[in-house]
Image 1: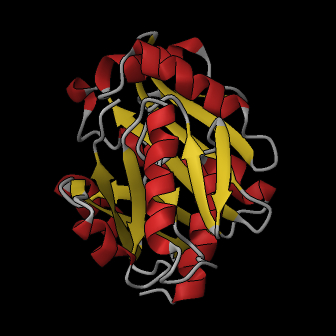
Image 2 (image 1 turned 180 degrees about the vertical axis):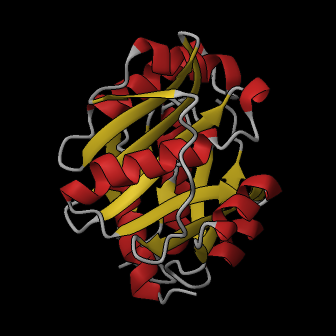
Length: 261
């Protein structure tokens, strides 16, 4: 399990890897807004708090009014360390409830990643930007529709300081898998948008894209650490990443309060 400062660092890298439209800073809390697409980009990151017991109630109220102005519910991202350390108790008193399941952040060094054979029955293409075929595939097979994908297209265009790459797996001229890699200046390669057509699962498509991304692009550009996030309910993905050598660094969940908009 990672220590507090390591978790804060990963949370900061995550915000840079998943940049919202708008930010607001409130006594150390970071409020993020992005048209309601993904809780991660539309929630408060309570990494630090410079307020006190005398200001906490007012600050929670301000958060709720801020998200209400954007026609969004108030959501807090709650990793295993947050500030102040009584924030979860306060939010529960205010009527917040857990949103969805717990998400695990998993991590390993490039050296400790267990190698897998790449399935050469598929063709793999790299892109420097999130192209239409990438977004269309996610719209068809993920829980986010075409309109949500347009918001995510805009998000990916804001990833400037970290390097980014997109990869698709192709079979018979059809996209059957996607994966996104975001590499920060310290060598942390974040993996996202991993998805495979249900008809092509259990054929090592996702692991092939992962290792292609790491070997062909990540390592030549300085990748030292691989990390990603997976929902605790996704047992198949959890087992796969554990098999590849990734270990849990920390977990987080969301606390949400729906208000009248």
